[in-house]
Image (cartoon, rainbow, N blue to C red; front, side, top):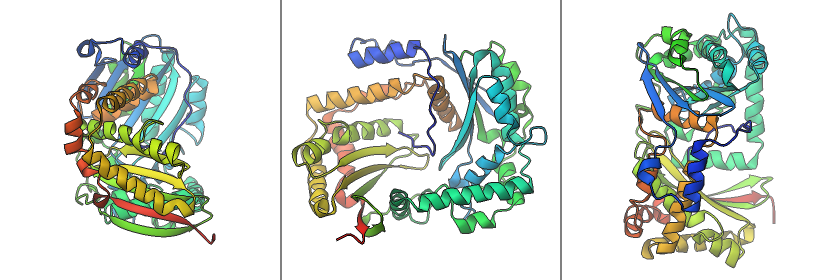
Length: 454
């Protein structure tokens, strides 16, 4: 449900007990949901300075994931600082006073591991995958790297050029242009409506000192969660207590940026644009959803969007792609965010079909309110949502990620707690509380056409 900036290929791992549960859910052979619903056991604790720690033991997993989460996403940037959170992510990998540039990667690779990071709107995370016997060294290396970046001028100037090139490449992609315009219109005047990469002007105004200030301001103990999943040493608490994380200050943020001071207001409406080099026309539609903390409602939207757009039997796919054959593709997804998320519907078609596609989508959305899901539709959607939740926790990296972000935002609960909410959604409840909010007039619609094509 929650989108991230980067996706990285995972190392293959053998099955865990959680995978066995997922298979039972998929096959419909498990009726003991109350007993099995928790999945892997999560242990949470806090260091003296307020930093949170999470461990999830996964027996026989050949790799362990160490995932460092921080409330320092792009929405914490002030106006004019766009791109700072992402730029800082880059600079952190440029080394510390003890680790030369590239030395961290070499050391992790020598341990048989790999590393990466991702910056989101709400948070940023850095993670490593290592064999279980090398967890202690990896924890020491990762916490040192993230908490003690040197941010020297030479590396800063070189890496800024790298990020500027990344922005230029994004600007050159028609799909990226459309999505940027789309979010800007949905969330006017809020950091959620700004792109994570920033823009050339803001990047050129960033200095090494402003990056260091952002790091000091937000990479504080009370903003951090360290999550570990896999085969974990029995002395993991002692290991973490001997890292730089335990010595970190717990002072409050000096500057809260804009994310906490600006109310998230969704802007409904309709807009048409033309984009050069766009291969197919696009229809993007969006509706606001509650914050990620309202997990029962999030599950409701997950079920509803599955009924609308998941698989060939879903309402939108069946009508527009299978029956009428007027779209190349159509998808409906949700993005859960801490201040309030969004449902996004995207359809691709030839330009001559654009109006017909929009009309048919609007008809189906209105019909979904007037004609509640059948028992068969609801059962199928709930099953798919359950499968997605369970199979999304097969790998240590997936478990560490979910456990980390849940703890970071103070959602102290079993990993599969949302499964309990799935069965609470009846057809009538979905119609009244979800489909009622997915009417075309309540959303924002963007029509994107290829520019210069007849």
